[in-house]
Image 1 (spheres, rainbow, N blue to C red):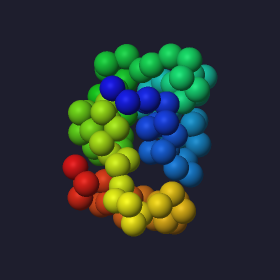
Image 2 (cartoon, rainbow, N blue to C red):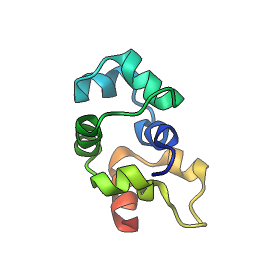
Image 3 (cartoon, one colour):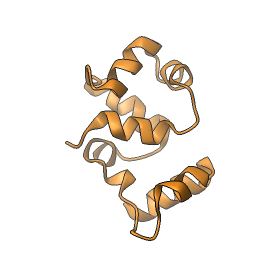
Length: 93
């Protein structure tokens, strides 16, 4: 499994930790610990995260969802809308 903290930060984008935490039914401090790498989500929370971001559980856990082509850099990723980002990620899976 790749570093889940980096994957979660990448996926969250411009959303707040509180928004994501509330949507999946955990506290913001718990979610913050995941992003800091102090702890990892339980399996049920991995499933909720995958559902929230509409990605496969395997993609979430293995980091496949953030593997972009060499022509797509971090700056262009930051400029993508939520829908464009999900389309790019789905295309890469």
